[in-house]
Image (tube, rainbow, N blue to C red):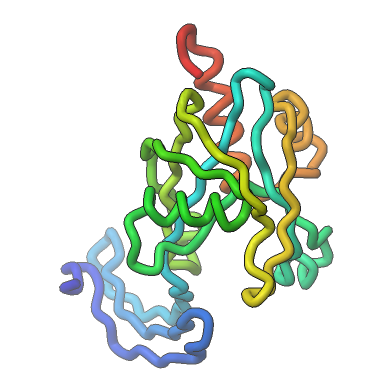
Length: 197
C-alpha cells in the first residue's frame, strides 16, 4: 500500500516474529495544521479473524465457550474467559473459516452464516480486524465433540447460556471479552425489532 500524503515511513524494525509480527515504526506524520511530526509507534500483526454467536430461539440460549487465556492472567484477571467462538482467518474466507472453527470448538456444523460487520479491535496497537457473522437459527446443525484441538493447546468448555443471563453476565463482569459483548448486544438489539431473530 502506498503511503498517504500525510505519512512517511522512515524506518521499520521487526522486534518479534513468532506467533505474530511486532514491528517498531519511525514515521513522519503531517498534523492537521500542516506541520510534520516524527513519531515512534509499535504495531502487532497477527492476521485478521472471525467470530460468530450461535443463538437458539427455541431455548433462548446462546452458545459460548470458556478457555484459558494467558494474557488475561498476566493482567491479574480471571484467565478462564467466557467468549464467542472465534478464529484466525489464515487466508480463508470468513464464513468458511468460521464453519471450521465452530466444528472444532463447539462441535456444531452450521451451513449458513451472514456477515454483519468488520471491527477494528484495538487500532492503537493491533492491525487486526474481526469479521462478525450471524448464524441463521432456522438452519439445522449437527453436534459433534468440540472442545478444540489438544495439540494446539486448546481445552475449550462449551456453555449454553440463556441470553438474558449472558446480558447480566456482561454487567457483572463475568463476560468481559469485547467481541462477545458486541455480539450479545447486537443480538439483544435485533430481538427488540419486531420480526427479527
